[in-house]
Structures are given as C-alpha cells and as structure tokens.
Length: 78
Image 1 (cartoon, one colour):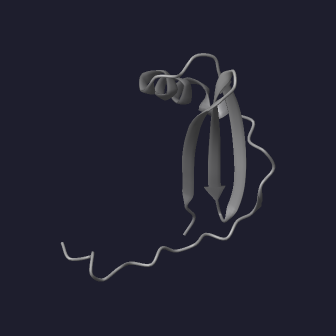
Image 2 (spheres, rainbow, N blue to C red):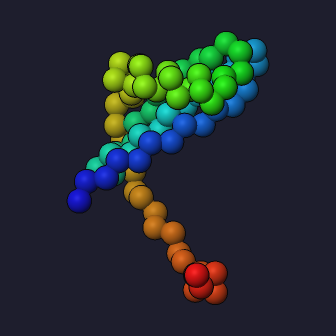
C-alpha cells in the first residue's frame, strides 16, 4: 500500500522564520524550504498550504527507510 506523510517544521533562522516541508512517499524523502518574513500564524500557514502546495518545488527524492515505532505494552492499556 502506498502511503504519503508530510510534516512541516517551522523555526527561527536569523533574521527570518523558515519552514521545511518533509514529504515521504513510497519510501522516498523529498523536502521543500520556504522563508517567511514575520513569525507565521497557524491560519497563515494553513492558507498558504491550501493555495500554493501544488506549486511547491520539492527536492529530488532520496531513499528513506521508514522506522516502525515499538509499542510499549504497559502504556497500551486503553
């Protein structure tokens, strides 16, 4: 089964705020970096993703081994 995972990390890199999108698709990792001016608010990021995600120029993909998380049986009592 094909799966796609996308994460966004936003951090401050003097003098700008920067966002890095990481996309994992079919065990291939590609990234896209965007520079914000001021600190972005959640709604600003959401609107930017909705309007511009299709135009993001992700980097060429590299192989990525997806690690599975071990489940702690003591904490899995719901």
